[in-house]
Amino acid sequence: LQIHRLGSSAERRRRIGELLDLVALPQTVLDRLPRSLSGGQRQRVSIARALALKPSILVCDEPLSALDVSIRAQIVNLFTSLQKQLGLTLVIVAHDLAIVREVCSNVTVMYLGRIAEAGVTRPLFREPAHPYSQALLSAVPSPDPRIEADRRRIILAGDPPSPSAPPPGCRFNTRCPVAIDVCRIKEPMLRTVPHGGVAACHLADGERRPII
Image (cartoon, rainbow, N blue to C red):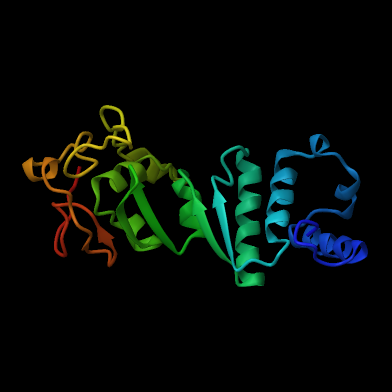
């Protein structure tokens, strides 16, 4: 607010109070040093600061990676509340697909700087078409012990290539267990897949999907 020269000192103080209420923090936070705040409180302060200028889009890069499980659930609920209250669009960059499933309406899976798959979150999570998406989703634990007992984890071999020197063809071909010759030669185009979204895979089309 100071950088953009918005409002007087009293008006800025009032706006900060509104932001603290918005992220469910007590006004006493204003009189505390950052080191005296918990990880969850510091994350809420960061969210409040990002909302100070009333943006329509909020980009969150790994917003939950440093938080414990109980605090993560609170921040997820906060994001959901902010979406409803402010009509806010959230762009979340994350490796935690369980969080993506809870918060995001659409998801894009990327590998080495290229889109591997994209679509509406729920259908894509139910029926991933790209082998990389299948491997990622296989790592997401289920709270249902019966489902968890039958979950088959897909372990990918090798390490990701350097993004500055990607392999020819499909960028995932060096780790893909179902890759065929064309995958090592020709880069796949995004094509429509059964869940209604798109995937960049030579083996995925409107009627089938590669199964690892």
